[in-house]
Image (cartoon, rainbow, N blue to C red; front, side, top):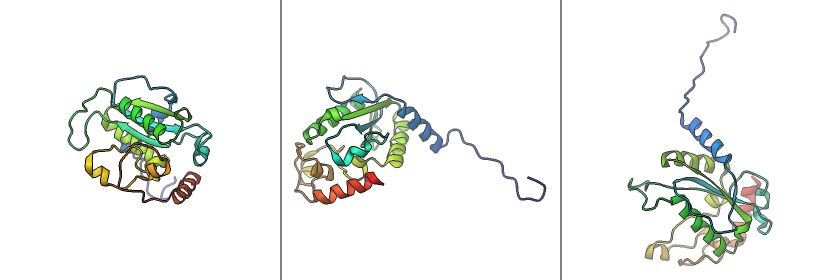
Length: 197
């Protein structure tokens, strides 16, 4: 830049910015192997980040995800309750979440052999950043369109609540609810459009 051509402004660099930390976490996460869900998941200790991927042929709306790094669901097994700060009662929060998800997949009429997962164990503060990064970057269909996959059934309030979009689209999970309020055909259109986008 010659003299008088404008004002020079040095670059800003924050090696610990939220964006950079999130990108580093997600990059490391995606280097982890994809593990089949076909068989029972062996127990392991630790909290952290996980995601579930579709790798099958039987669920047509998800077929376009098979050759991508786009998960159908991203979540975390937390070491502490985010609302209270109380430590998790288990040393295996990620394992317990994945085991419950495998059961939900099977009860929802889906074949666990068509799914894979990946895991990266880390402190919950970093898992929060990674989960947020995966959800914003990929907008996984079970986090954004077919919500309700990762919810827990808890007592009478949940039994009175409406059937989730996930449970409407994938029938069969052993849940009580206040009745079907979503239309399957409309959900299917939204899923296809979301994945196309």
